[in-house]
Amino acid sequence: EIVLTQSPGTLSLSPGERATLSCRASQSVTSIYLTWFQQKPGQAPRLLIYGASSRATGIPDRFSGSGSGTDFTLTISRLEPEDFAVYYCQHYGSSPGITFGQGTRLEVK
Amino acid sequence: QVQLQESGPGLVKPSETLSLTCTVSGGSISSYYWNWIRQPPGKGLEWIGYIFYSGSTNYNPSLRSRVTIAVDTSKNQFSLKLSSVTAADTAVYYCARFGGYYKYYYIDVWGKGTTVTVSS
Image (cartoon, rainbow over all chains, first blue to last red; front, side, top):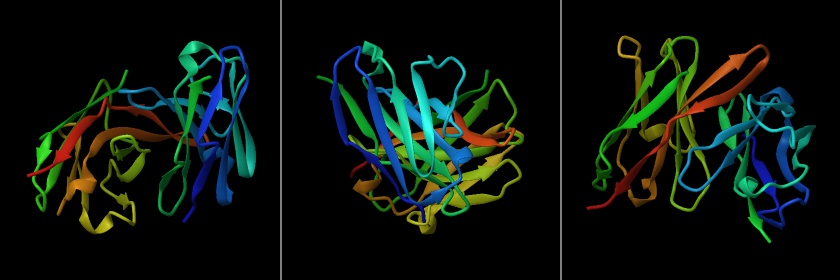
């Protein structure tokens, strides 16, 4: 069973700064099945990145994803006020199916 | 565009069965995997399971013994039953669409979520 570990648990930054969020898999995974979501309070998650590095429709280009194997990164180049939220990585595999990381909370410093 | 809407009781008694339905509108239920995902208060996302439109299922091993997901293609709906619930099953329950697009597979549509509280 694949376990996704996100770090840090909480990231405190200011608007305009660069954010780097990590997602580490317990074993090598197929990058085309690695996805990132953003979730704001009281809302459902929103698709940001699929296939580890492809931006979903309507996602600003300040969001980018990278990585392969066991290490993946979500980068937000210049934080906007609306970017402060919780971010989840997620993987799809044969067993157990769909796995989420525990999330990284991005908060205003 | 496709929209998902969860429905069902917001309060379930301990040891009883939680039952939810997700209605798919604006598109067909065919050719996708239909998921249930939950989020306990203040915690992260937990995948419960999915059903393919043809009826094949895949469940989270930690919940498999208590979960049944079914699909009704004639109504464009799918459902969740979770038996023998406890307070630990209190959560926001989301339905979500998971599909294959070229070589990629990802969840691209979510319902707004429905809160289920387990309490006597």
